[in-house]
Amino acid sequence: MRDPREVYIDGSIGEGGGQVLRTSLALACIIGKTVHIANIRAARRNPGLAKQHLACVQAARQICRGQCEGAKLASKTLDFAPGPIRCGNYSFDVGSAGSASLVVQTILPALFLAGESSVVTITGGTHNPWAPPFDFLSESFLPAIATAGFQADCRMIKPGFFPAGGGKIVFEVEPWSENKGAVTDLCEPQTQPELYARIYTAKLPARIAQRQRRLLRQSGLRFHNIEHVDVKDSAGPGNCVLIRICSAQRTTVFASFGMRGKPSEQVIAEVVNLAKDFLAGNAAVDRFLADQLLIYMAVSQAGCFTTNQVSGHLLTNIEVIKEFLPVDFSIDHQGQMYKICCNM
Image 1 (spheres, rainbow, N blue to C red):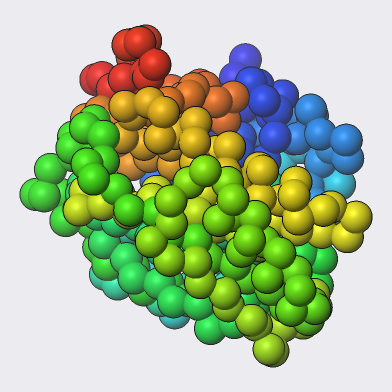
Image 2: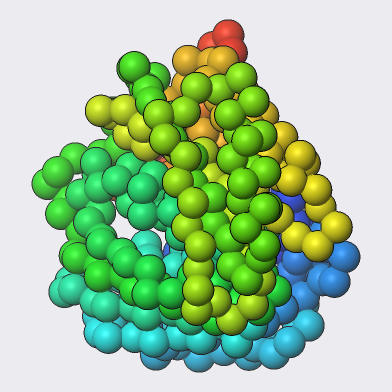
């Protein structure tokens, strides 16, 4: 018979990736219950804990002096018993080009509830495929959750690109201001948005950024400005192209990443198509931000947003959150968008 003091999570649920692990660790810290996770990353080519997932486990363990069993590379099972959440000055090293952003995603919800401010420094990848780039965190994600009183500032000390890594980001986290209400104002689309682009290159020929700038100009989108950031102190070569949709309401950030053998035409087409699909609808929140908002809505016990696409990550996050907290989420299909609300 299962222990009612523990939460049991099947890591193969939904899209069966690392999101199950990260959300489970965050919520275990918040509610103070032991979590047993089986079949970790069952749907991935190399299942089990990789370096960046192990970094998430160790970060969660440190902020609450938790106890772990199964915290090793390639482990498919994890038992995590949290203690009380502690504020503090923390430093974590992913140890590879694994995403620093995903470590932040794991511990940030808990640190907001620590009662006092914290500073978190993370070394690893800041701009790599399959994870939110730093610009998304700073310009889109943090302003969105600030509407519910979750206040944090961040800065990038050094970019780190896949596969070398070596980047560094710092987050200053304030205690949650519950009296500021819930995430309720993310339903209306951006009005009169202006488009900006940012091209990151590191240790690459100048012609690559020049070609990508030209392709952006020819994409059919009208850019207010296209910025090129040539990173001089990178640990290795890298390329990231961002489109930022900016308005008085919020900033939406889309990204695509260059890599060996991937032509600039493909890099630009990926990020342009993401932006065009979003602009074609009336949604307030893109699909990448949408699944990140759920845990904060669940903690504040209310909130709504509209999004142009319901992703597998979002549906998986809903199922995991419901295993920890007495909340539900409604998904209402409204023409070209979906309205998602947190219900008690």
